[in-house]
Every structure is written in structure tokens, then in C-alpha cells.
Image (cartoon, rainbow, N blue to C red; front, side, top):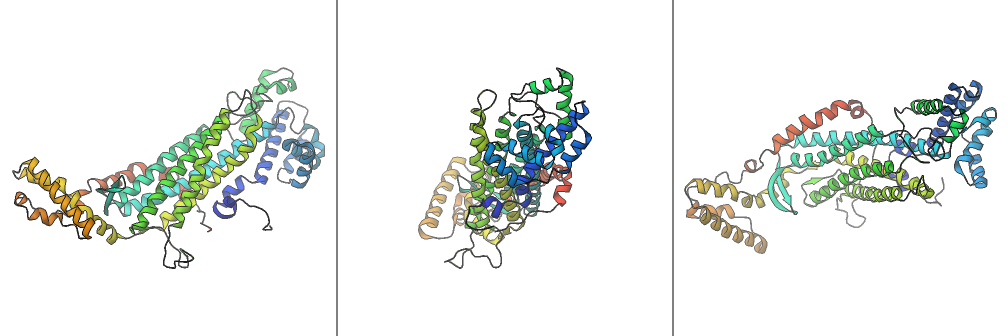
Length: 476
């Protein structure tokens, strides 16, 4: 392909071949034809005048699409579905008269979109499960490595590297529950007619309501769905799209949060994302190791998050049985949301697979703040040794402020423990192990163990095949 036309970078740079294929023109229009075949089959089974030979002719040409011919028809007719009806009819002249019999355009467009949504959600679920699995492995490996916790991005009570990873992982577990629900609740539009009343099919079957209902069930089953939506207008409710986009936006939020944390941790030189042997961090500053994968994941995730509003706006403005202002918007938002989240999960998996942890730097940073973290335990020990709680609290406050001032103004080491050791009020308190970080991480290691056992193991058991499957590679 030439380089003189814009190409979507979601396809050319970021997303997987699998997701790009799902939303391809070939998949879309082959699915239209599968739907026309299924409709003809069901109508024949219900005794309409359709021959087996006509159906065989249609089935034989499902993937043999003349896109140039369809484009010529669309330029003349200004209607994409009818353009493909004509192109299909030219390919299958004996079946031309029964293609699309009784159907409206949304029979093929909406039902196809629901099939593509289902396939795409399953692909996203697979990527999500793989990231969850890898994050859980990382959490287990570093379950008891103490590190500074942060609230308000200020040093707070210590946690562990593994416990922090469970926070990232649990966000994705919550996203997995949402995507499982979306897959489970997704239904088929089915055979509903022009405004959802099935009037054209009722006419085809001479007023036989039972056969119209059976037609809907037959076609729904042929395309692999257990149910169709109870009622529709011309389209299935665009609330479904809004819910799917919201689900994808949730995954994007989780990826963005983790990516932001990684960028901050790499700034502190505590944990780094993978860096290729020949990778260049900066065209000018050769020494740099930029968190480019985390940055890219945040960038793509932010794009996906901002597509969510399109689904809400489109649903809210579907007047009566439908308006066509949904069409162009959905052609953009639905595939691009899936492609962006797919790309984000590829990056997420790649980042977690290659995380580099620097325990000595983590410990150094922790020890710089740990004396302050230890003061609550020291205060309690002083009270237990017979001291006055309010007096000890004031002494700790004064010593802490002075130690902090020395750190900030002089760049000195944090000598709070030495100051307390020299204060007679704390003479009865053993401060020998005051800076043992393991004393201050609470149940963080045990929480990691419980999280893996109770939350992750059932997920691994449910999705064994997905965990053993291939993973997409980061291309740039």
C-alpha cells in the first residue's frame, strides 16, 4: 500500500492482528452473507418457496465478495446494504430473488455488530486473563519485599511490592467480572423487521404468528445465540453499545492507573518496565531509559476512555424507533474502542512480563522515611514502659520536625531514631530493631497469598486454555 493516504495507527502500529481481523471489511460482509444464508435456510424450513440449490449457491459464495462491484453499486444506490445485496445477487443469480427476503437493513448490520461485539469481547477477555495471571505471579514473587506506601503521593505506612501489584491486579479482576457479564448477557437482534414489529414476516407467512416467532428462534440459534432481545425498534437498543463501551472504558481506566504508577516508580528508580538492548530512550539524551511502553499504554487507554461518552450520547439521541445519526459514529467508536483496549492489554502484558525490580533502591527510599513510620509503634512501647502518652507524643513531634528539617534543608540523613535513643524519656524502650521494615508491613504478605489463592486460582482454573494460548507481541 502507498504512503500517500492516512492509515489508522491502531491497525498499523498497536492492536493485534486478531482484533484487526474481527473488524475487517471481509469479516463484516462475510457475516452479512452468513446471515442471509441463515435467513433463507430458516424460511425454507418453515415452508417458504426457497430451494436447497439456492441456499447452496448462497453458502458457496459467503467469502467470495467482489468489493469493487459493491463499491460501484453503493456509489449509484447510496445504500451499503443494497449494494451488497446486488453484488451477492450477481454472484448467485439463481438465488438473487430470495436474498434478504422480508428483512430490513438492520437484520444484517445490527446482527453482525452483535456477533463482532461477542467475538471482540471474548478476545479482550483472553488478554485480560493473561495480564491478571502475570500480575499475580509478580505479586507472589515480591509478596514480602517492603516498600514505601503512598497516600496523597506522600510517604505513608509501608506496604510490599507484591501487595501493591495485587491492587493493580484486583482492578482487572473487577473488569473481568464486568466483561463476563457483558458476554453472558449479550443477545441477538434476530428477525424483527423494519420497526421491530415483524410486519413483513407476518405477511410472508400469511399471518401465522407462530411461524414468525419460530423464524426468529431458528435464525438466532443458527448464529450461535441462545436468545434474541425481547423487543427492538429498527435497531437493537443502543444502550447495549453504551454498556460495552463503558466496560471497555473500565479496562482502560485500570491500565491507565497501573501505567501511571509505573511511570512514577520508574522515576524513583524502584521498578522499571522492560527496555530493549538496542532501544533508544531519547534522540538527544543517550543515557535515558524512558517508560515509553507505560506512557503509550496510558495514551491508548485515555483514547478508549474518551470514547465512552459517544455510546451514551448516541443512545440518548435515538428518537423513537431509531435515527441514522448513530451509524457513522458507531463505525468509528465500536471498532476503535476494541482496538485501543486490545493494544493497551498487549502493552500491559509486555510490561508485566519484563518488570525489573531494584530492591536496594526500594530499601534505601524506605529507610529514608521509616523512622517517621516507626513513631506510632515507639509511642505505644513508651506508654507500655510507663511513660506519659501526651508527653511522649510531644517529644516525638519535636524530634520528628527537627529531623525532617535537617533532611530538607541540609540534605542530611534521617536521624530521628538516634534522637529518640538519646532522649531519657525513651530510655526504657528497645529501639534496636526500630528500623526493621518487616515490623511495619502488617499482613501484606499474607494478603497477597490469600488474594492469589481465593481470587486468582479460580480464574486460572476457568481460563486454562486462554493462559496456554499465544500472546500478541508489541510491534513498536
